[in-house]
Image 1: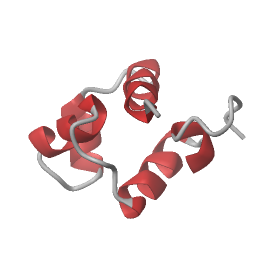
Image 2 (image 1 turned 30 degrees about the vertical axis):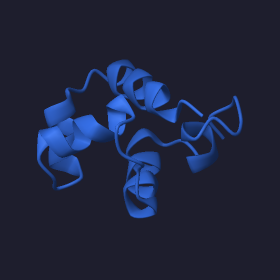
Image 3 (image 1 turned 60 degrees about the horizontal axis):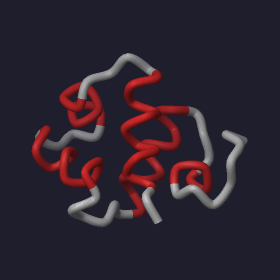
Length: 69
């Protein structure tokens, strides 16, 4: 599963930097980078926060479905 690619696509589609998203998640940019690069698994609370930020389902971020709803 390559959900981390979807994280990057969503961030770029919303014209956000990694720092913007890290600030939203109240973490440092290098920590968020690890999620987006796939070097760390994303915790469920971070996944939920990102789904709310981008207004998509967690299933969409995890590539379990191809539509955002």
